[in-house]
Length: 222
Image: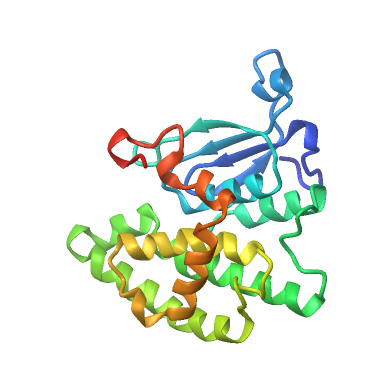
C-alpha cells in the first residue's frame, strides 16, 4: 500500500500471515474483491490476529470472504484494521465516545496485542526451543495477565470497559484462549475469567471462534 493512501471500502483486503495488514489489491478480472464486492480475510483459524478481526466483522455485520493461510507452512496490524472498520462502519461502536474511556480501551488493546500475544508467536516459540516453550509461554502470559488483571479491576463492568463490548474485548478472548492452550492457571485472574465467560456467550464471539472456521481441522471442530 502506498504511503498516505489508505484502502477504500470497495477494495479493502484484510490479510493475515503472522501479522494482519491492509493493502490495496490489484484490480483485474482475477481479483476476488472486484468480482464479489466483499472484503477478503486471509486467515489462519488459530491466529489471535485473525480472530480479533473476525469478531469485529461479525459485530459490525460485515459479510466477507475467507482465504485460509497455513502459518505452520508459511504484533501485527490487526488493531489498525479494527480501527479502520470503526471509522468506516461505526455501528456498533468498538471505541467509547468518552475520550478517557477510549484511551483506556486502546491501552488495554495494545497491552494484549502488542505486549502479551507476540511473545507466543510461532517465530518466538521456535527460537525458545521445544523443551522450553510451555514454561516460556506460561511465564510471559502470567506476567502480562498480572498487569491486565489490575487494570481491568478498575475499568470492567460486564466487559473490559463497563458494559459495552469494545476493541479491548476483541483482544482479550483470543489471549485467554492462548492462556488455556498453554495451561496457565486462570483462577488467579478472576476479572479476566469473568469477562471472558461473558463475551463467549455472545454470537459474534461464537461464530468467529477458531473451532468454526473453514480451515479448522476436523478433529478441532465444535
